[in-house]
Amino acid sequence: MKPTVLFICQHNAGRSQLGAALLEHLAGDRFTAASAGLAPAETVNPSIAATVAELGMDITGRVPRAVTPADLEAADVVVLMKPGLALPSAPRGEVLEWSFPNPESWDADAVRPLREAMSDKIQATLLTR
Image (cartoon, rainbow, N blue to C red; front, side):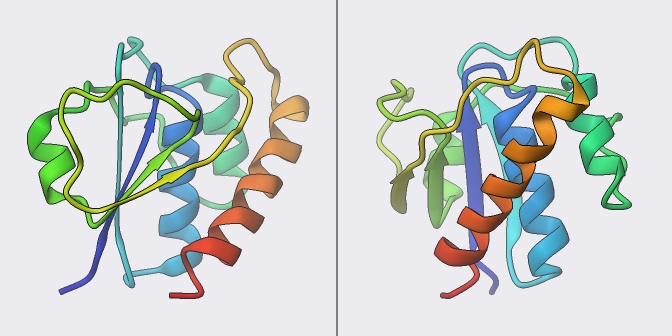
């Protein structure tokens, strides 16, 4: 069974959506990628969606959602996109705390370096397993 990686950020509109999409793009079917947030936004950040589209993926239909205790129980790896996020329950799996800035008001040009940095982190941390 392939491991599940759950990316969590505040609104599940930017960093966590980007992390899950990048893992899907880079790892193919080696992992199950999921994302959630503590206080979900209404939609995925359009600049995040645009930079993911440049990789050939469409995430515009994804809907931000709240992280649940069931999510935390099911995940083999939980990636907090901001250190110190207060989760609704203790995760079962390994917890990684990454520190990426919130791209909430960024345009696509500003998001691209974030996408590349996150891609490098995923390759160095998750794909080497």
